[in-house]
Structures are given as structure tokens and as C-alpha cells.
Image (cartoon, rainbow, N blue to C red; front, side, top):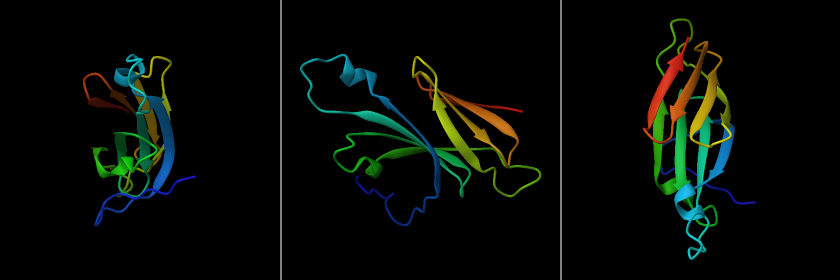
Length: 115
């Protein structure tokens, strides 16, 4: 087990996680390094964090945040469970405070929120 943290002053309140192999390195048999795409929902700040890196090192030093749209009812959308589809090209997560389902298309980097 390894402990990782986001760089300061960023705070993190993880709730859900999906981990998929990075297809770029998975197709290169000469590359022995292990690279994964890690998707974590940040329950407290209304975002999904996308990390790409070697899990044996500290992958949280470089990450991308996908912020959800504000909720009309609650101040935070509370993103929670995260799942990858069978192709690992799309990531889905629910916003139980925002009453939405979100999808991130990994190839385009576009997030869509469904009401």
C-alpha cells in the first residue's frame, strides 16, 4: 500500500475510483514501465481528478481536474462512484448532489453532464 497526496495547497476528499491501464504503453512490449490512468471523484470540491502516471512512483504530481457544473439545490455536486466502460475510452460518474450522471470521453477530453 502506498500513500499519495495532491501537491499543496490543493485539498482532496476522494470518494470513488477507477483505474485503467494506459493503452499507449500497453501496446509497446519493449516498455517495462507500468503506467495507469487513475480517475478519482473529489467529493468535497465537485470534480473528477484524472491522473496518468506510474503507480510505483508518485503519480499525483501531474493531474487534470474536471469540475462539475454548480447545483441549484446544493452548493457542492458530490461526485461519487466512478466506472470505466469495457473499452476504457469513457469514464462515468454520478453526482448525487447535482442529480446528474457525467461522462468523460478520454480520447477527446470532453466531459458531458446528463440531467
